Image (cartoon, rainbow, N blue to C red; front, side, top):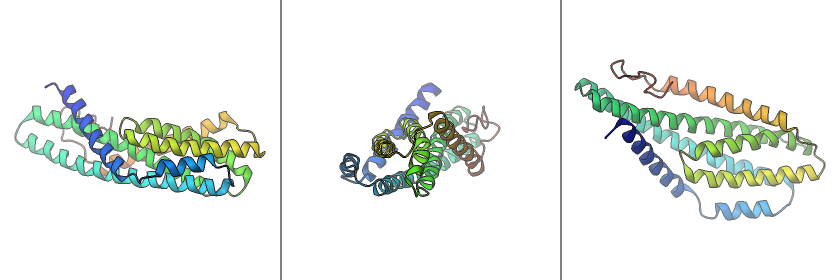
Length: 228
């Protein structure tokens, strides 16, 4: 079996494992409750609080997923070291590729978690109607990016985050109809990109701080470890 085939198979298995756990951890009725909230206009503040709570639920799930990936990382890393000690370079390289995939997935999950945390902090500061457009406009961009980024790691997360995106979108539309202001799309996109970039930089640094580099005897070194 080629290294590329092994790498693709390992990624598929990992995605299957974490998708299953994500699905099982989802509470029954999540979509129903959230759809009812979207359909019911009502006051904006309670709907905003509902969105914030649901984002926090996703953050908790991402944190749990990251912890499981860290455990997987440690296990594979130890196997790489053991293979090198046995002079089994071929097996060590296959494991190194698998480790690289795990670390890429964990970086993506960590970045998504950090970005969502920034969004919840901003949503919690909304006090006036005018704050909603300013806060939600970039938040929508971040939510969309997080949703699309997690599809390859946890497909089931796409649906729940999509529901949250729909709720935030309805709040934004209603706020606009109430005269909260005009959306500056250019400014909103720049702010969303800034949030994602900062989250990515922090995620990268955390990965470097928490996970050891592979031994130099493994071709690729830090690149194989997923830090390229």
